[in-house]
Image (cartoon, rainbow, N blue to C red; front, side):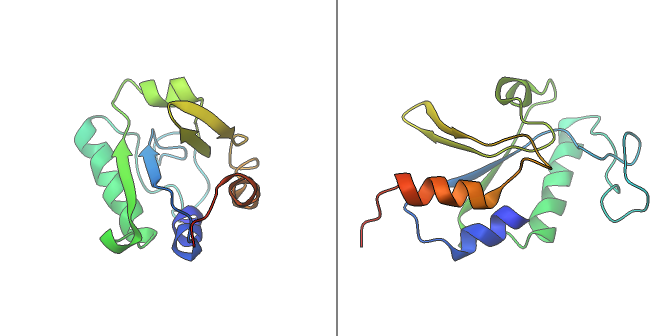
Length: 126
């Protein structure tokens, strides 16, 4: 949700992509007390993962106007494993290269660090 809010304030010529991986705090797994964050169970199939994406889109108020593309990892979690993304992580990719790899979230998930990197490395055309 923070990333969607950040993107809406940006004017960088870049595409934002969210790849939804397995649920970090599933209601039937490792979870927080209460239902504020742990109300989605572990995904048992791709349809359940897609349903979780719909919840994310609604909660983060991601619309077609925000131009944030959302994809789903497949059930064997290959994207999660390749990018060591669980529970969340920020990357900047360009020409099939990783230019920025944020620390693992939630503690290392830092939009200010991403913003600093983008401001120093993305050429804006005004």
